Length: 247
Image (tube, rainbow, N blue to C red; front, top):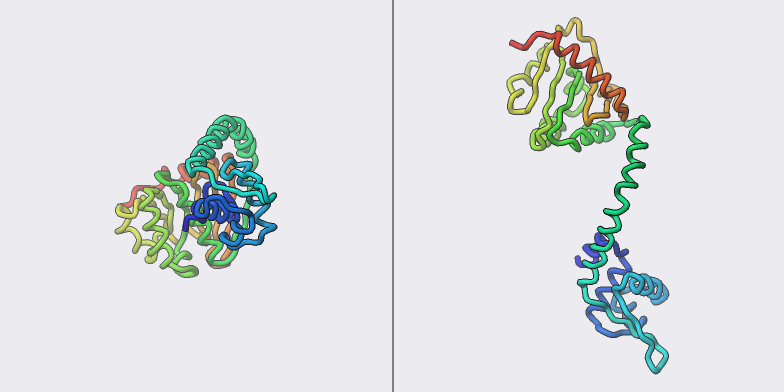
Protein backbone atom coordinates (compact mmCIF):
# COMPACT_ATOMS: atom_id res chain seq x y z
CA UNK A 1 0.00 0.00 0.00
CA UNK A 2 1.12 3.56 -0.70
CA UNK A 3 0.87 4.59 2.94
CA UNK A 4 3.30 1.83 3.94
CA UNK A 5 5.75 2.95 1.28
CA UNK A 6 5.52 6.54 2.54
CA UNK A 7 6.40 5.42 6.07
CA UNK A 8 9.67 4.07 4.68
CA UNK A 9 10.46 7.60 3.55
CA UNK A 10 10.19 9.20 6.98
CA UNK A 11 6.47 9.77 7.53
CA UNK A 12 4.61 8.09 10.36
CA UNK A 13 1.47 6.15 9.49
CA UNK A 14 -0.96 9.01 10.37
CA UNK A 15 1.04 11.51 8.34
CA UNK A 16 1.05 9.14 5.39
CA UNK A 17 -2.72 8.56 5.59
CA UNK A 18 -3.45 12.29 5.83
CA UNK A 19 -1.08 13.20 3.01
CA UNK A 20 -2.78 10.68 0.71
CA UNK A 21 -6.20 11.97 1.80
CA UNK A 22 -5.12 15.55 1.01
CA UNK A 23 -3.85 14.51 -2.42
CA UNK A 24 -7.19 12.87 -3.17
CA UNK A 25 -9.50 15.57 -1.78
CA UNK A 26 -7.62 18.67 -2.89
CA UNK A 27 -8.50 21.52 -0.49
CA UNK A 28 -10.25 20.24 2.62
CA UNK A 29 -10.68 21.05 6.29
CA UNK A 30 -9.49 18.96 9.21
CA UNK A 31 -12.78 17.12 9.67
CA UNK A 32 -12.91 16.11 6.01
CA UNK A 33 -9.31 14.98 5.99
CA UNK A 34 -9.65 13.05 9.24
CA UNK A 35 -12.76 11.27 7.96
CA UNK A 36 -11.08 10.40 4.67
CA UNK A 37 -7.96 9.12 6.42
CA UNK A 38 -9.96 7.23 9.04
CA UNK A 39 -8.32 8.84 12.05
CA UNK A 40 -9.50 11.02 14.94
CA UNK A 41 -9.77 14.77 14.35
CA UNK A 42 -7.58 15.63 17.34
CA UNK A 43 -4.88 13.31 16.05
CA UNK A 44 -5.23 14.78 12.57
CA UNK A 45 -4.36 18.28 13.84
CA UNK A 46 -1.00 17.12 15.17
CA UNK A 47 -0.16 15.12 12.05
CA UNK A 48 -1.10 18.03 9.77
CA UNK A 49 1.15 20.39 11.71
CA UNK A 50 3.99 17.94 11.29
CA UNK A 51 3.28 17.67 7.54
CA UNK A 52 3.31 21.48 7.32
CA UNK A 53 6.73 21.57 8.99
CA UNK A 54 7.96 19.04 6.43
CA UNK A 55 6.63 21.20 3.61
CA UNK A 56 4.27 18.48 2.36
CA UNK A 57 1.02 20.25 3.29
CA UNK A 58 -0.01 23.92 3.13
CA UNK A 59 -2.89 25.64 4.90
CA UNK A 60 -4.88 28.86 4.72
CA UNK A 61 -7.76 30.25 6.83
CA UNK A 62 -11.12 30.75 5.16
CA UNK A 63 -13.83 33.38 5.74
CA UNK A 64 -15.81 30.98 7.91
CA UNK A 65 -12.71 30.71 10.17
CA UNK A 66 -12.13 27.11 9.15
CA UNK A 67 -8.65 26.37 7.90
CA UNK A 68 -8.31 24.39 4.71
CA UNK A 69 -5.34 22.21 3.87
CA UNK A 70 -3.96 20.91 0.60
CA UNK A 71 -1.14 18.59 -0.32
CA UNK A 72 1.99 19.91 -1.97
CA UNK A 73 3.39 18.22 -5.08
CA UNK A 74 4.72 14.71 -4.28
CA UNK A 75 8.07 15.81 -5.69
CA UNK A 76 8.47 17.59 -2.36
CA UNK A 77 9.09 14.19 -0.82
CA UNK A 78 12.01 13.65 -3.16
CA UNK A 79 13.36 17.09 -2.26
CA UNK A 80 12.98 16.25 1.44
CA UNK A 81 14.88 12.99 1.02
CA UNK A 82 17.62 14.71 -0.98
CA UNK A 83 17.97 17.33 1.74
CA UNK A 84 18.16 14.67 4.44
CA UNK A 85 20.74 12.75 2.42
CA UNK A 86 22.86 15.89 2.15
CA UNK A 87 22.63 16.45 5.90
CA UNK A 88 23.52 12.82 6.57
CA UNK A 89 26.54 12.99 4.27
CA UNK A 90 27.78 16.05 6.17
CA UNK A 91 27.51 14.44 9.60
CA UNK A 92 28.61 10.93 8.58
CA UNK A 93 32.34 11.48 9.29
CA UNK A 94 31.49 12.65 12.82
CA UNK A 95 29.15 9.69 13.37
CA UNK A 96 31.89 7.30 12.27
CA UNK A 97 34.18 8.62 14.97
CA UNK A 98 31.71 7.25 17.53
CA UNK A 99 31.69 3.91 15.71
CA UNK A 100 35.46 3.76 15.90
CA UNK A 101 35.28 4.33 19.63
CA UNK A 102 32.72 1.56 19.97
CA UNK A 103 34.87 -0.94 18.10
CA UNK A 104 37.54 -0.95 20.78
CA UNK A 105 35.01 -2.20 23.30
CA UNK A 106 34.43 -5.96 23.34
CA UNK A 107 30.86 -7.15 23.58
CA UNK A 108 29.50 -10.49 24.76
CA UNK A 109 26.04 -11.85 23.96
CA UNK A 110 24.40 -15.02 25.22
CA UNK A 111 22.01 -17.15 23.12
CA UNK A 112 19.77 -19.94 24.36
CA UNK A 113 17.63 -22.63 22.76
CA UNK A 114 17.52 -23.85 19.17
CA UNK A 115 16.28 -20.52 17.84
CA UNK A 116 19.04 -18.69 19.64
CA UNK A 117 21.67 -20.95 18.08
CA UNK A 118 20.11 -20.42 14.66
CA UNK A 119 20.45 -16.66 15.18
CA UNK A 120 24.17 -17.15 15.78
CA UNK A 121 24.54 -18.94 12.46
CA UNK A 122 22.43 -16.36 10.65
CA UNK A 123 24.83 -13.71 11.93
CA UNK A 124 27.65 -15.45 10.04
CA UNK A 125 25.69 -14.95 6.83
CA UNK A 126 25.99 -11.18 7.24
CA UNK A 127 29.60 -11.31 6.00
CA UNK A 128 29.52 -12.30 2.30
CA UNK A 129 32.69 -13.15 0.37
CA UNK A 130 34.61 -13.72 3.61
CA UNK A 131 35.94 -16.79 5.40
CA UNK A 132 34.76 -18.65 8.49
CA UNK A 133 37.28 -20.61 10.53
CA UNK A 134 35.65 -23.52 12.34
CA UNK A 135 36.38 -26.14 14.93
CA UNK A 136 33.41 -28.44 15.12
CA UNK A 137 32.28 -31.96 15.91
CA UNK A 138 29.52 -34.34 15.00
CA UNK A 139 27.28 -32.88 17.74
CA UNK A 140 25.67 -30.59 15.14
CA UNK A 141 24.05 -33.71 13.67
CA UNK A 142 23.49 -35.67 16.90
CA UNK A 143 22.16 -32.92 19.17
CA UNK A 144 20.73 -30.31 16.82
CA UNK A 145 18.76 -30.05 13.57
CA UNK A 146 21.00 -31.20 10.74
CA UNK A 147 18.24 -30.09 8.34
CA UNK A 148 18.89 -26.46 9.33
CA UNK A 149 22.39 -26.73 7.89
CA UNK A 150 21.50 -28.87 4.88
CA UNK A 151 18.41 -26.92 3.79
CA UNK A 152 19.18 -23.38 4.93
CA UNK A 153 22.55 -22.39 6.34
CA UNK A 154 24.92 -24.09 3.91
CA UNK A 155 22.98 -23.12 0.74
CA UNK A 156 22.78 -19.51 1.95
CA UNK A 157 26.47 -19.52 2.83
CA UNK A 158 27.40 -20.80 -0.62
CA UNK A 159 25.11 -18.26 -2.28
CA UNK A 160 26.91 -15.47 -0.41
CA UNK A 161 30.32 -16.95 -1.32
CA UNK A 162 31.35 -17.42 2.30
CA UNK A 163 34.20 -19.91 2.39
CA UNK A 164 35.00 -22.23 5.29
CA UNK A 165 38.16 -23.77 6.64
CA UNK A 166 37.31 -26.41 9.20
CA UNK A 167 39.21 -28.59 11.64
CA UNK A 168 37.19 -31.66 12.53
CA UNK A 169 37.40 -35.18 13.99
CA UNK A 170 37.80 -37.84 11.33
CA UNK A 171 34.82 -39.94 12.38
CA UNK A 172 32.14 -41.51 10.20
CA UNK A 173 29.59 -38.70 10.54
CA UNK A 174 32.10 -36.03 9.60
CA UNK A 175 33.54 -38.00 6.67
CA UNK A 176 30.10 -37.95 5.04
CA UNK A 177 30.57 -34.22 4.54
CA UNK A 178 33.87 -34.45 2.72
CA UNK A 179 32.68 -35.39 -0.81
CA UNK A 180 30.73 -32.09 -0.91
CA UNK A 181 33.65 -29.94 0.23
CA UNK A 182 34.25 -28.28 -3.11
CA UNK A 183 30.63 -27.50 -3.95
CA UNK A 184 30.03 -26.25 -0.42
CA UNK A 185 33.09 -23.97 -0.49
CA UNK A 186 34.76 -25.85 2.35
CA UNK A 187 38.30 -27.01 3.06
CA UNK A 188 38.86 -29.47 5.87
CA UNK A 189 41.62 -31.04 7.90
CA UNK A 190 40.90 -34.02 10.12
CA UNK A 191 42.17 -35.06 13.51
CA UNK A 192 42.01 -38.55 14.99
CA UNK A 193 38.66 -38.69 16.84
CA UNK A 194 40.42 -40.42 19.73
CA UNK A 195 42.44 -37.24 20.16
CA UNK A 196 39.83 -34.65 19.14
CA UNK A 197 37.54 -34.48 22.19
CA UNK A 198 36.02 -31.09 21.47
CA UNK A 199 32.25 -31.28 22.03
CA UNK A 200 31.47 -27.71 21.03
CA UNK A 201 31.69 -25.64 17.87
CA UNK A 202 33.88 -22.55 17.62
CA UNK A 203 33.63 -20.12 14.71
CA UNK A 204 35.87 -17.15 13.96
CA UNK A 205 34.45 -14.71 11.41
CA UNK A 206 33.70 -11.14 10.45
CA UNK A 207 37.11 -9.85 11.50
CA UNK A 208 36.09 -9.46 15.15
CA UNK A 209 33.63 -12.21 16.08
CA UNK A 210 33.99 -15.56 17.83
CA UNK A 211 31.00 -17.81 18.48
CA UNK A 212 31.11 -20.72 20.91
CA UNK A 213 28.22 -23.17 20.66
CA UNK A 214 27.17 -26.20 22.66
CA UNK A 215 24.51 -28.01 20.64
CA UNK A 216 23.93 -30.50 23.44
CA UNK A 217 23.20 -27.80 26.01
CA UNK A 218 21.46 -25.53 23.45
CA UNK A 219 23.51 -22.49 24.40
CA UNK A 220 25.79 -20.14 22.50
CA UNK A 221 28.12 -17.26 23.21
CA UNK A 222 29.09 -14.49 20.78
CA UNK A 223 32.20 -12.49 21.58
CA UNK A 224 32.85 -9.34 19.56
CA UNK A 225 36.48 -8.39 20.03
CA UNK A 226 39.09 -7.78 17.37
CA UNK A 227 41.87 -8.82 19.73
CA UNK A 228 40.21 -12.12 20.69
CA UNK A 229 39.16 -12.88 17.10
CA UNK A 230 42.67 -12.25 15.74
CA UNK A 231 44.18 -14.40 18.49
CA UNK A 232 41.76 -17.24 17.78
CA UNK A 233 42.54 -16.95 14.07
CA UNK A 234 46.23 -17.25 14.85
CA UNK A 235 45.63 -20.37 16.97
CA UNK A 236 43.54 -21.85 14.14
CA UNK A 237 46.22 -21.11 11.53
CA UNK A 238 48.93 -22.71 13.68
CA UNK A 239 46.85 -25.89 14.00
CA UNK A 240 45.89 -25.81 10.33
CA UNK A 241 49.49 -25.55 9.17
CA UNK A 242 50.60 -28.38 11.44
CA UNK A 243 47.93 -30.77 10.20
CA UNK A 244 48.56 -32.82 7.04
CA UNK A 245 46.52 -32.24 3.90
CA UNK A 246 43.59 -34.60 3.60
CA UNK A 247 44.24 -37.47 1.20
